[in-house]
Image 1 (cartoon, rainbow, N blue to C red):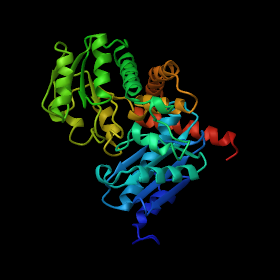
Image 2 (cartoon, helix red, strand yellow; image 1 turned 90 degrees about the horizontal axis):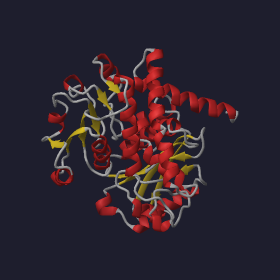
Image 3 (tube, rainbow, N blue to C red; image 1 turned 180 degrees about the vertical axis):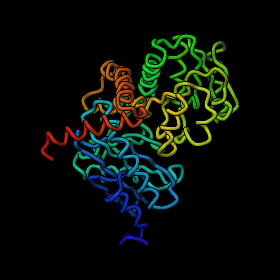
Image 4 (cartoon, rainbow, N blue to C red; image 1 turned 30 degrees about the horizontal axis):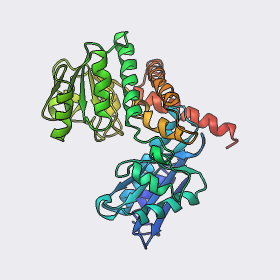
Length: 367
């Protein structure tokens, strides 16, 4: 069955009827001259204007792009709520291969669509888009963050993202072992790119033992060259999750790292990483809890980046952002405490806290 647009009807069912829906607005954007096809999804503005990145990806179908935008926008509502930001959740996806169709004309057309929303949605970088792209979008839209310092922005947000994940690790250590210190702990990092390599620096500075892997050999070699002691490498993620004596596992690459295959063999006692959407499907959080593995919810600990781009709207100040990102430590501890008191996994506890904040904000607005 299809809807009036020809898209599978299950997309509309998700939007209007499922627990994963409830979005305020979804905008389909097309500019034939530049080849732009995009979806802007606004999940919630209860806490303020929706904030979330722009993903540029060669989706197999338009319906897949819409579904991804809906899912990502909803996730941003929870992330922004838990980060204590005065922003709701939104996300945009541009359909196509950025390596072949990305042009200034396409990005400018996209910027005009974002601007047409009058500030209800604030955009930033995501997979397939970069600081230079946001500089182009900003020429047509003042509600653009993640720009270069030369154009009034804060630049790369990976530094604060890694710092936030590090704070989440410290909170996990405090909760599980009664001491936030990571000295002597063995931490496995899957993905040592933009965020992961900064995370290694924090861990080595504190005296943690680090095991790394990455699909790019050059990324691993860069880490080994910089840290000839205290860092080792393994062939792949399959080997990493089986490393004996691993204390913390940090997925910092693709989503879905925690699944029916990986959770049963994971040796770590804590999972705390930068990757988005680490839980492959509902129920994985319970599988982790049943094995006694403490999970620090990804959208809580990786919020340093969104804290940075939100601050850009007010005139970026790194020290102010770092102070806000340091609160991820306290937020993570609060989630663990709520999970224990409610008898639920930390992922469910984080969702409850975020939903409560959004509900209270909506009530204050009289919604």
